[in-house]
Length: 261
Image (cartoon, rainbow, N blue to C red; front, side, top):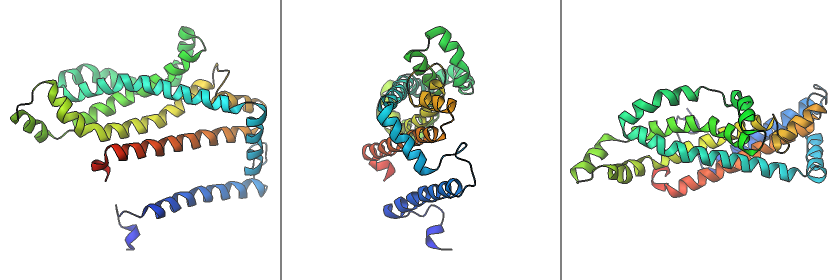
């Protein structure tokens, strides 16, 4: 078996970047071949050049930068509020079994509730302003993140905790000095993953009752059957998400270099 096909065998950073870029090139070439080759009508799928033209029009004529800024603000706002609630609660659930027994059934129940189903109620309660959009993201992220944090903290090695007791550490100091440092790298990765989910929730929130944002633009483009603008909006979401994910990953690797290597 070739060395590069061995399971878990690492590859150089340049090779990893080249392979990732090659995947994008392959998808773009396939898209261009299908659309420019006449296999799909432009009404149903715009070609890459027409999509770029639609994007240029959005920036020049429709102030698309403002829509992008509003969407980013909603994602960050809802995600931060969810993290401020979920991380402390998840730490307590992972560290103390009575707290876990009390909260886990409800958190597990909430984890299966689709955030989009709450939109009619949230519009009724909070209107169609920013509170409704932030609430959708909060509901979509908080239960998932709470349970992930609880599992991560609860999985800290028992021998580390017992060693801290032997050295005289007691009470909440065990959490602060042993459990949190051991779980911090994985908690940071959980935050990175849930941030990606938050992007899916904000688009759902903006499809209903919104006057700004990328999702609102996509909905308006659907009404006039402009697939170029719709695809460009989706592309922008992917680019922003990819950049934020890579930035989050770099920060995590710098902060917890001993864990990620």
